[in-house]
Image 1: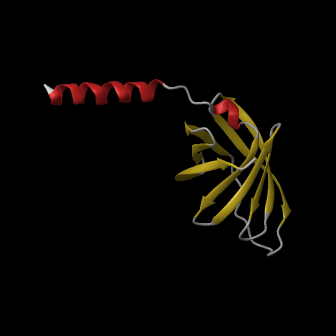
Image 2: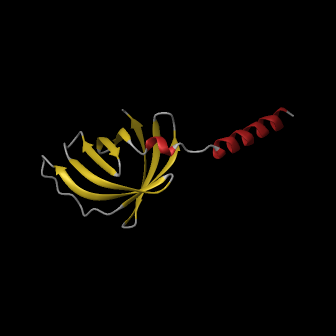
Length: 128
């Protein structure tokens, strides 16, 4: 009987978690930190524009943000604003970003591109 109650509790909690709405609206604008194997990035997003700053390399780039739906947006490269180490950048392709999880101060995203098979998941933490 105890095993049956535990099983029912697990199923109900999993259904409740899947039924929760993602609070994506709170992350359309703001300042975020993304930590990765390539270093930390500060991302500032406001009114259809995203600025990405690499703390490790000092590069700054501007991207356009187009929201496709409540939890998915497309990033399009606009220009390099700063490149103090004269790094070579590969050809930029549009990225599709889907918010797959939210917390009070962060969200997890899945980024992909039509040009590459690689799909990346990362967490962005609000810093302002």
